[in-house]
Image (cartoon, rainbow, N blue to C red; front, side, top):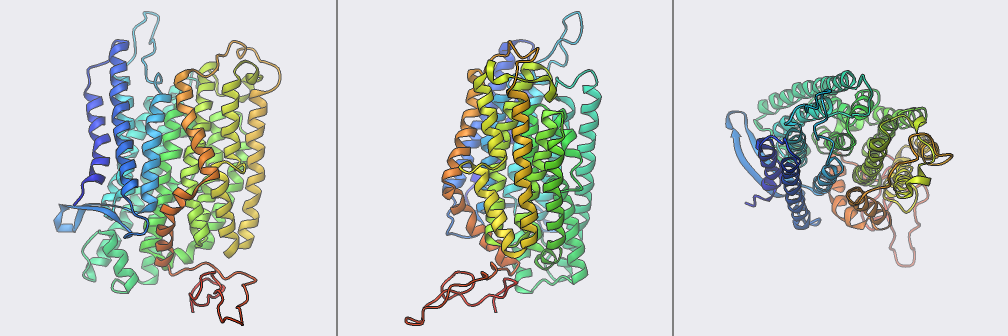
Length: 558
């Protein structure tokens, strides 16, 4: 049994402990040592995540590199890990973003003068900041690899603690005199919302275990439970399945975040450092949408189909609502937060459209949104650190004094509005095509989100980067070497995956097909199917696969 998955989770966890235990950094040299140790740990984690992805065989079993260790035997709880295509790419995304976030946040936790005597506040800030980032990374990766329902729940909830301290204890210094109070409010709101979702999920997890135990399945093992449900050996009544589905989905919708459970996100991102904001929206929130695919659809296939239309309506509301509020924002970070709410609407819509294009697009969207939003937010963070203000009105003419900064900010904005040739376009196109195939009205309304995205992205660029140079902007320096090292790989990936997404689709598509099989769905038949060739007797079925049988308009095989 390989221990590669355990190592990928254990290295950042051990690194977090080591970083926190380093001597207090009262000098620049000690602080630099702390940062270097944390960065090296994140680099090792990235190498392990790359190894996991390289060893994953898209044509092999659904879950690979599996490991299982006994944990709480009396309740059938194990420390079980296994990776499918979706979990592999999202864990790799996490491992890519963490060292980039560390480099971008290199000076964010340096102690600031606490008073006129020149004393410094909290000399352990540097150790704590980087240790918390590594702790979040470890817990998120475990969540992507976990194949035990209870194990997933534990780390799904545990990651809230380090995120709470990152938001509340290491917030944005450009927030003004009320920033400490606002950071505290944002951190508490983040924690309460997500704890409430987690408690509801815990009740559903216990309910699932009780029902399974009554039928001879006293386990939390995901593969055992989903296999028994698919084969009819474990049966959930209609009411029980719907209640359990809602318990799981509520927790995931809060973390995703789906309208109207989204209100914690603008506060949390607005009061965080740019690096922490990236961790929130590009890393932690992805656990929610990932879990919808793995747990909601896998454990509760019938309930997933029952609630899909209602979830699609909420998703479309989120797409339009988030985009409209982004247009009206005066704060740069809150604008990016509302834009992310709109993007998560697309992701969730693709998942519950129940088509291969929709779910493949949703998975790609998770990756592409993580990369493009990280680039946009981190450049925005560099901009804010130079001017000391998050207000859009305080900027103007930046492209005249810092053209490289303005150019990278423009590319991040163009990726956010899904410009063809950049990565998010591919995923957004697939989501819309997959949704339109089964729910045309939903797909049409969601398309307006693209128009609104162009408005908020381009208006932000116009107001901050063009026009006359405003006071406080004239002496603004351009991007430095460290900042270019941060932004360049993100922009390169945005372009590469925009023109050649095949490496990702080859990995995720088998997992998408397996997910659709669990909910007994196939792609809807085209409106104008290809006519059979009477001369040869060959033709294609309604789903485009030769000889695979006919499909009903609802997408299920006869």
